[in-house]
Image 1 (tube, rainbow, N blue to C red):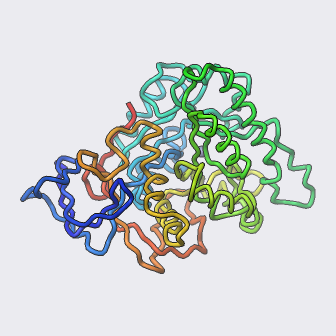
Image 2: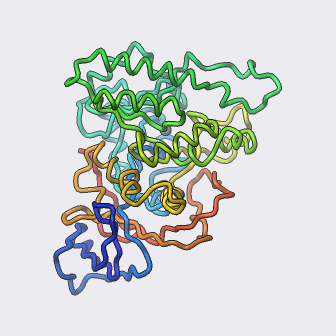
Image 3: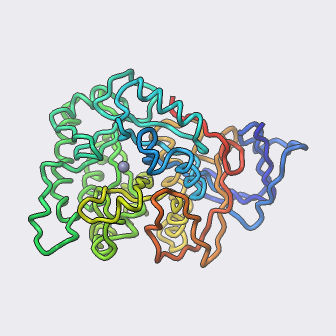
Length: 417
Ligand SMILES: [Zn+2]
């Protein structure tokens, strides 16, 4: 029974302000108006801030199929370190999650092994019923060993699902490494922004060809360019049900970092320019970005050693809340926006009932954070084995993560049904 009392708590309320008092958790649910249960364990939260646990809508925990890279248990321990209480895991497993049978098998593994709450995305085209998953994912560029979905299939996928997440890079716009002689680190040049704008045009065309009421919700994953931000503004201004997701590496790092550091920072979409970073920081403050994911995509250290053969993807879970809290610390965003970006909007977008806010009757998914300038770096847990932000100094740290009322989570629950 997950009863817990947080005394001396200062929690982030749905209005974006902090409230002080005692937070009572009964059977994993927030009961703000009830007296503490006399036998419930008590946690003293003095000096900390209690915020909703982060909802990371985009992870790759590599199980089933590539457990050597990460696995659910290890990946969700990394999530706990970063203050993440829910992960929505992507379907590009080996083999991909593109059938009901494979979805059921993956769900069973998460039920056994996940330390945080979870939901699963499926891979388009998907053979199965239209419920029980967070979204159907479209890769317009090859991902791992999977072929890209051609623009011609977009309309079909849009008609088949209620929510579609899209990796918007058009593979036909990529350039060969041989086109950049003398530039050993040209990954970012091989995947130019023209490939993004071409993918967005295809998406807009296909979505626009479907009657308004029959369209799915669309999530533009890992926004990295000013062009995607302009597109989001454009489609949102037309009232389209389109949401924007970005990841910390796109505002903390640039293509110059990639050229300097090498394959550890090889990622898709690639890191971009300082101008894109500036545009993203503005979009985090006032929109059109709706929520932050990590796109946590670990590979083995030895796989990341060689520039040409290194697979793309970097880890992110351990650094989730510390990196977002730096935006608060620097004054770029306020607490209300923090709440939207880390939990509230993802819960709304993916229909995660009873999650994402600290409010009477909601599930007790919480992170206890404290401001400690020069705070210790998060413990490294991921199988990727490296910190993509070795030079970052953090002002905040995650002290405790509570999942369904349990400190440091013991078993997660499925949040998408
Ligand atoms: Zn991804």
